[in-house]
Length: 238
Image 1: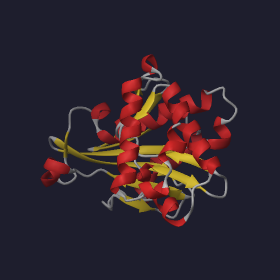
Image 2 (image 1 turned 120 degrees about the vertical axis):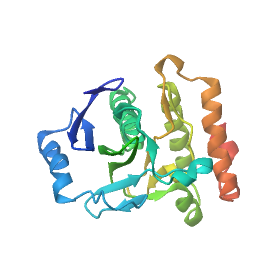
Image 3 (image 1 turned 90 degrees about the vertical axis):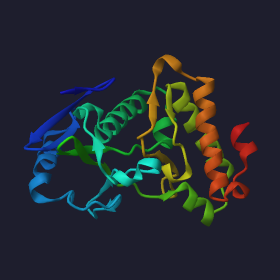
């Protein structure tokens, strides 16, 4: 059992493989997760980074970047709870708990949660490779949306509200870029994904330094993708 801030994660070991999932999931989903190793439902042998499984799920495979890129998808194994798939799973579990417990009635009408299903870790001697399985979300990543649409005042308001809710609860995604935000045009809801660099610190709510880092990362993403001319930063930040 691996503890998160607000829940716990169950881990099952099969020889050199570990499958981990939120202890609060219903029995029917637990059985599906466990059987997924044998049925190949999650296609864990496929090492694509992002793969739509056409079954309502998304798989993210972890790859090295930057100076450590030569190691490809191998990471040093320092214990199951320290692996990237399990750390991100813990972040998704705690993020979902906080958002669901938020008393502001507007939250459920604006923020849609990406539900974590399980994390998968495979030991390979002193190293490991890993994946995380998540619920599939309808909509466009925010960069795709900006390319095809003119952003409305309501979206500015909803996006600003969403950021405020995160900061008020001590949630800071230090990789807050346009590709990690999904906008559903049918429901007008906003989703946040990719919690590999998420910080949850309830003792530092509305922290100016963390908030500034998140907003700076978001703005740089606009500039990097040449979409800053399609986004009114002053309307958003006021």
